[in-house]
Length: 134
Image 1 (spheres, rainbow, N blue to C red):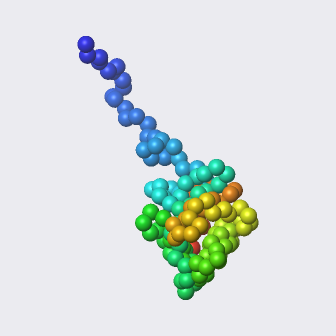
Image 2 (cartoon, rainbow, N blue to C red):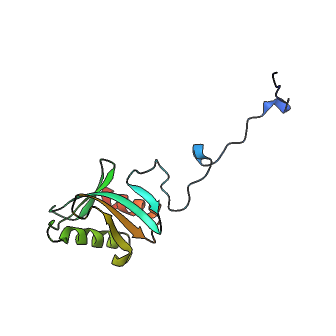
Image 3 (cartoon, rainbow, N blue to C red):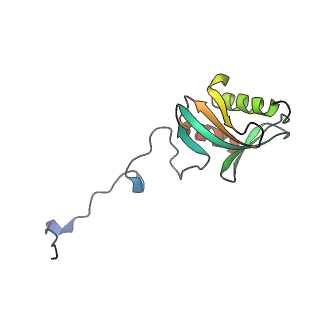
């Protein structure tokens, strides 16, 4: 059996949905572009996937590299100096206390996972990517 569509006045188009294909608008602090593979909202704050290059000429955010945010550090990778410099740099860049920045994974490697407590993922992305373009 075939159903017939109800006849409406001149088949008006459906009202446009706001916020793109998902139907919702981005919340304040969320990036409006495509999702960033190195950033997600975690329990209590933003979680960043980083690749770190120690012994660089200066400490700075470079941009995206292999699906992670690349950070160059002037500190050497000796006795945890690079990890301490990374956490201090992120705390300063995102205007949070050093205690709000925690290294979740990657203590001895270049690929690291860091949680920033009390910071929305979108705000973290805006601040860090803004530094990369400067």
